[in-house]
Length: 347
Length: 260
Image (cartoon, rainbow over all chains, first blue to last red; front, side, top):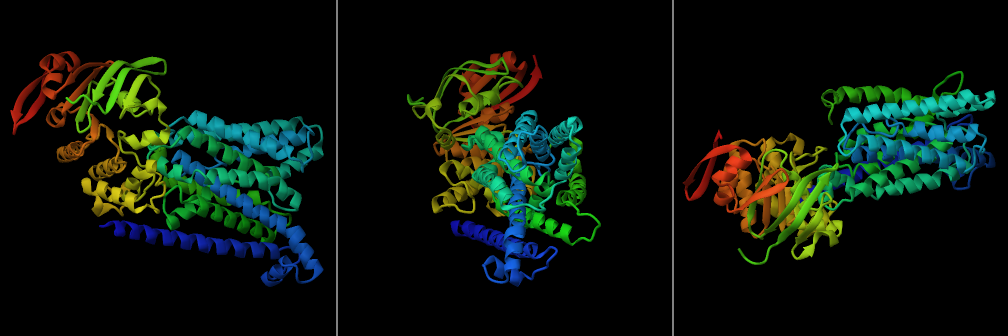
């Protein structure tokens, strides 16, 4: 083997990854067009494209650009940040079972938002909502990582995550319990299920700054995740500031998940599933898993949001319900696969 | 001994969780030497290795190549120490070559897919040195324990640092691989690198090391050439054993034999 041979094998792997990312991007664009075309008025991808470009009838332009575009953009961005957060947490903890929803981050973010709504501190379109959600999400991830310590086993992570999400759920229930206004309670209960329905560009403006900031923070650490494959001590010996990396990941996940939950409620399991779907395609390098996982997250949430509009039912299925219904069996499958590691109590 | 030491420590003291783990350790080690760090379990060997690399906070002064360690930023420290921890943990099934390429991380080559020619050459040299080229494309999780330990060693060598710190690199290896690893480290030292090896194998220490450091309860109780540092008195006091001593093919042989 020569230097050229080393470079060549790298190029083959790189070409494969670029192919996977390109195919995923095409899939995401395709799903966006379908998402924009589906609803009470069905539009073909062609008329959707025309409406986006300002051509076609006025009615289809209003439907596509004002009613369906915010929903589709939110599905794109929230799916992406959930996939990215899952991949980042798995990279940080070097554990394929890590994900925001298993660690109670969305549940805690929801509690933060619910508290603000119930106390009547803000209406549902103010920045107080995402800020409260972000603070609560930050606290939950911070507590989890503090409990987990430097070399957490799977068991500790899962148990702490269970405790935190149960606590966030209980706290949310308490707020609803104490709330004197039954309409507020009903509104919160539905909002908690997680949905992208009837979202406007106001919601997009509310969530996007945080999602983009969080996403950039996580993406900026991609090389550190790779070094972390060798454990924290070795990564540190290679010049990685592990303390800073942890803070970046906690903050990035909190910003992204908090911003997302504030406008859609809790949508779980995308962060767990997306990286797993990508590993067979792009390999296990945690640094190179981030972008494909974000794309896969977008594709999953777009597809789920299309599905809830297609599946015939008497009342609307919330997208958060659908992702959990699919995500939990997948989680069980992962537990079966990781049974040995779980049984031993160490990752 | 030449007058210019590469790595020196003066009055090193480390506390972990309120307990003093290292106390008043002073040493001066030269480039081109293989140094064996020995001592009973819990003597503070790993702690000493970590503090020398600046991975844990310590009191006292450490100098590397004439510069105080505390004054160096993380990235600069990383270029000066190839650190090989116990156990060779790799958390993801990455190809062996990518693991070795992580040794170039301190030099700015953070992406194994985009190595500069200079970094690619360093990776290749390291892989050649420990003979792991043939399984460069295989995932480390599919390798045997001996193969994996060589990949880990290649990763530490790829840093091309003036100092290599290896924590029990021969643990859980069969005799043949133990000797392989020590010979690799010996060859690295002969190329001008200061190699510090933590080991429980006094026989390997006596045979391969130029200099032996003996730690007991956080203090350096003996150091020098293997035969002096591992004198009968030290063996009895520190390890509570007697040893069979001999010379074979002009190398020192120490075989722990019976308790005293």
